[in-house]
Length: 89
Length: 132
Image (tube, rainbow over all chains, first blue to last red; front, side, top):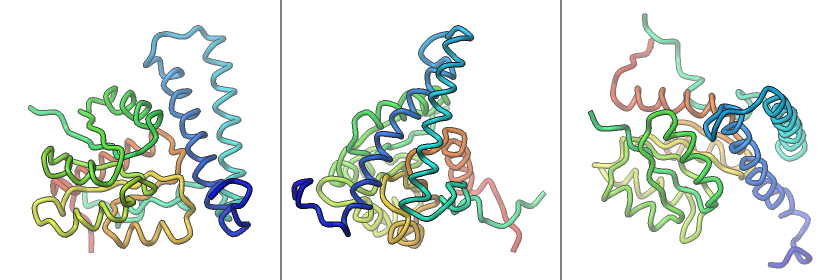
């Protein structure tokens, strides 16, 4: 199916897949740089990358809200392991 | 002692590359598959300690991989963390019911993914116990 014939009902799934994968790449490699896994950064470089990552997170929250109706919190984006009963001590 | 082996199943080469860097930096050995068929083969031949699984894959989707894994007694206890670009509706609950230890939508914070990996590994190794 071409983009021009993609139905309205399929649009959310298409947008979710395409935008989330692109955003994941930005977030992954941005955090790799910030964490120094590809070499040391200057303070200024780290600051600018931090700005980029903050704004990538804003886009993610907009996506979460628009496509899934959530606020982007971890609980809503779900993690089964987070919901297991408390650990024995 | 052998490194913990994680199989990353994703058809996006950039995602695979990013996860490779992050997981190796945290001491894991990383293997890759880019479709459901090669993922199933890697599960049998490599028997990873954990799988990070995308749902949208060529040659069958992530649910097919989980179904094959659950049907194999030797592989059924390998924890699966789903990491997908798909919507929550129709995918989250289905993935958890299919046996996924955790479900994340992309993009995931590295700390959250690494935490889930550690927890899932601990659980699969029986190193954690829970209250009733």
